Image 1 (cartoon, rainbow, N blue to C red):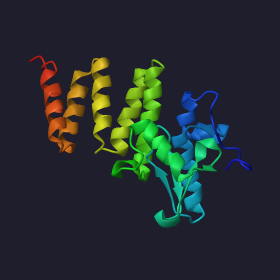
Image 2: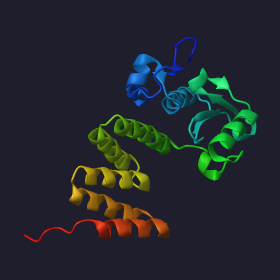
Image 3: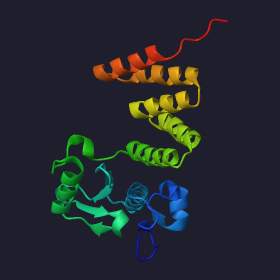
Image 4: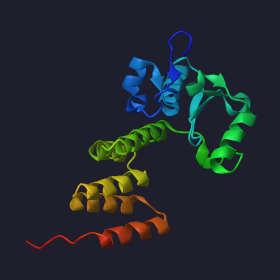
Length: 200
């Protein structure tokens, strides 16, 4: 992936939106940890290997092989093998705990795509393109309709755009899919705070 095809992490322009666009990543051979991890996993599985992206915070890694004899590699840093102590140091730096929790590994195909879309949406909004971010959150709700965060952000940006009916629809969909009592209260409060439709 590195020596023959030249896929590397873009350290110079890390926040370039093209680094989270898989087509651009393939064309440019530059990407973010999540986009490169998706390509590494796809390549490994094509070869018949067991491979899985890991939901490590801030910097996605890839596990090759079964859990008992797995190697962890870092696609962003030339596919280098990451020692267990280095993984623990990364986790401690990002979360304050040195061991994986159930939520940190592994990423399903759908979850990896959600993380990629979230990355793109965040960068689009930071660059002052809320309409582009809204399109990406809309895609997220299609790809992963049970992912509550996508619905919440979609509703927020719809409100920014003045689409109160759309925001109400997004929050209502979120209320249907979530079973977390605290989150349901938060969504219900947000729905109650929306302006009421004017009677015709």
